Image 1 (cartoon, rainbow, N blue to C red):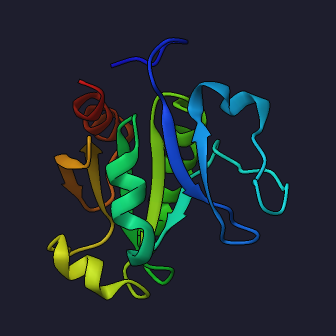
Image 2: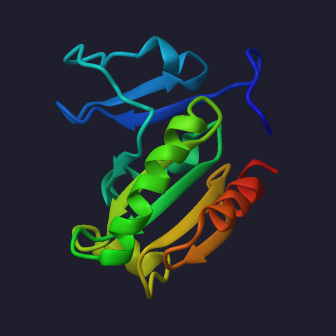
Image 3: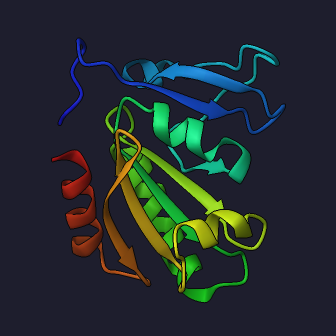
Length: 151
């Protein structure tokens, strides 16, 4: 499911500066969209933060697959995965949304998705889980998760 100029690619993301939800067309992500409230840039070349409050809307309304990293700041393997997820977000900007959810701050979502170990990466398409990987992983395994999300 590679995004083209005619393929819908709208996502809902929270501005990291003012917390306003914004609808963004990922096909125009290279144009550096700005927040409709504070006019600061919405950076889509890196993972976006999620919370329990906006999880269902962001993941459910996304017109592209979403890979969510369930992580914690203190987790060593999560820190190992961070550069790979940054690279993934940069390389797939426009065709995939990469998001992060802090399991310590969002324990309800962690329980809801049965997160028993971190990092856990879950790929969603049309709001439904399509793939899951638990633990730090090498780049080829991450690529396989993404392939399942885009299939």
